[in-house]
Image 1 (cartoon, one colour):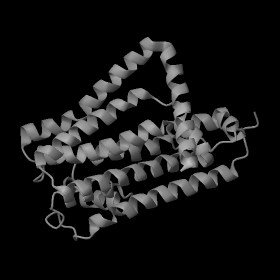
Image 2 (cartoon, rainbow, N blue to C red; image 1 turned 135 degrees about the horizontal axis):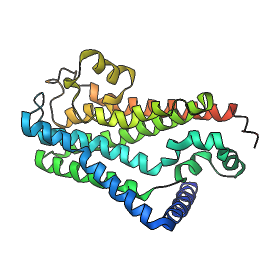
Image 3 (cartoon, rainbow, N blue to C red; image 1 turned 120 degrees about the vertical axis):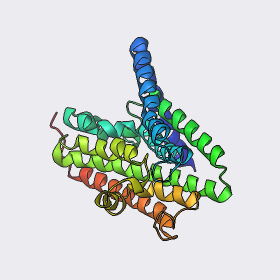
Image 4 (tube, helix red, strand yellow; image 1 turned 30 degrees about the horizontal axis):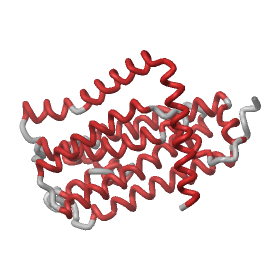
Length: 269
């Protein structure tokens, strides 16, 4: 317990320093916060427009689509806010910032997690939490349904953590040339998971399920919570694989990042 508390204390210290640095330019911070807030609000608009003008989407009501959106939005928002440093890892690697981090007697993961912490990212967490809470209330989910939702949220945090670590690890071999790949899997993946798998063509569903197991983040827990696993064409036991699939993504991402660190030979600065 003591090492964990020390880890949390140091993370909060890093985050606090990052916030103080950003608040030195309050006008710029306020403008970016407003812009980010508008982007987050607009992000959910296409779902409403689709249902408003075309009715249910492949049998999914607006509340059920909001459930999907809220689950993936909250899990990705938590990871994006807490581990933002990993998103800019290519810059730290190329500019030699990583060398300074490695000289400090603290975990490199801890330092990257708290580096450039951005409180304005909390808007995504607040918006996704609100959408998810309203969807759960409207759908009147019971204890079993809520358990599936929590399982999906936990799995989503594990999955996206693994993905951003995987993206950071790739920079050791490509020096920034695969930065957009990480964005495709995180921002693009969360956008794709706003809609049920049934709206996509067969090959794309297979990619999201067996290739990059994005479907295990929110889709499978959601259909289990709604009691429609078999009606969606899946065996009843498939949603139970969600935590394992998401944990596997984290293990792979962490292993590759550790391997990349071992082969790193400094920038020479």
